Image (cartoon, rainbow, N blue to C red):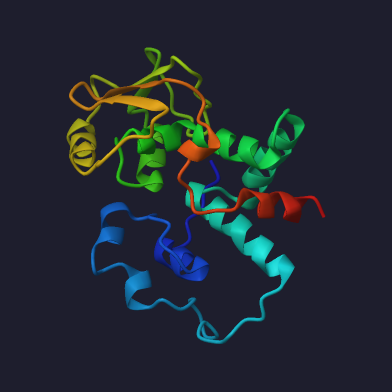
Length: 206
């Protein structure tokens, strides 16, 4: 299964803000963007001419890296969102939010999306009582996401829940029983991602 294996800290530095790709480390003084706030590479400190295209591109790259997707995967999500009724940008974010790996992260069962993706791929989670090992699996309202009773990662997942301050309002988490419920599809104001989705739509619409 294709996945982005590039250094997480370099991705944050390239976008100029914390994408919280390494979980707890991003909250400490070891965070790379706090120590070196400029872009990585030989020319990272140079001033870059800001153009409309560059602004749109950076916004798309930021969203793609935030959810841990490759370019082709992200483009497929955009095309699916564009075929749906409603606002394309909001549809795109909603499709990304209801991925199983993102839901596992939002419920507090992993400290980062990379970790949640790995946990899902290794078969540690069930959806409605069935084991699911596909990170891109799309959940629906009233679905129940739970940790497998036989999972060897229960202690790791329990540690992640201890670091969770809050859960998205469209989800309901039971950290004692390591389970969660999808209450509804998320609205735009309930999706706290640092991106302007309209710029992504403008980029792909060219």
